[in-house]
Length: 238
Image (cartoon, rainbow, N blue to C red; front, side, top):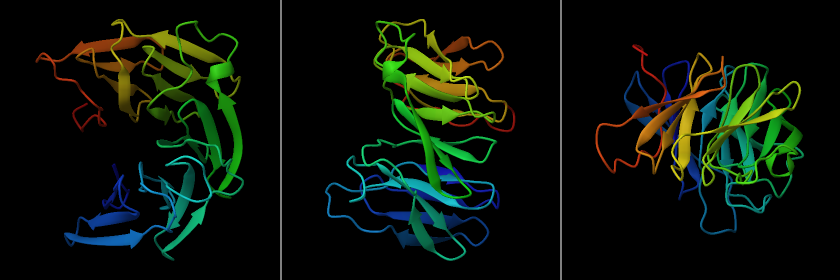
């Protein structure tokens, strides 16, 4: 995975290797840093995001966590130091990351985990699997996690065909069903307008969750069996 920082540099990870890297777009040079080691195999780094203060966030295989991508770590490029999130539950499964506009980092496949970026400390978690309004055909687990600027996380409940969205203030969870059964909504991104774009891996479509209506708009792809895996941010033309 990769992310573009505000200074224009591109950061990237390798899911099967313990390092992160940066491509300097001004000098066209690469620099890489070894992530703190682990006794586990396989091992690697999954998602990566750069916050407005320039800190680099990544989930990495670690002896401090049970799952392969269970330990979220903050990297400071200025001091070239790694620091794991304080008080993070060992059982957390945290492959994908999202930044809200309130100074928080979010992660998680079903339980969402909220982290305070300033103190690098775990704050609280929210378990979709035990939500009282969870539909009978929803798993409450998922694939891609993202969060909008107001701190409302979303999750693709891939196997069930739902997009789950929580109101960060009231903790109310909404379950939005996509139109194609077994379409497997998989990965995606939140754009600057808080629209969540995602792929429908088995449905041959791209979906967009409208933040104003919480309705999903779907866009068929021009080729059969395209099997879209993820969706990037919209470009400058939208």
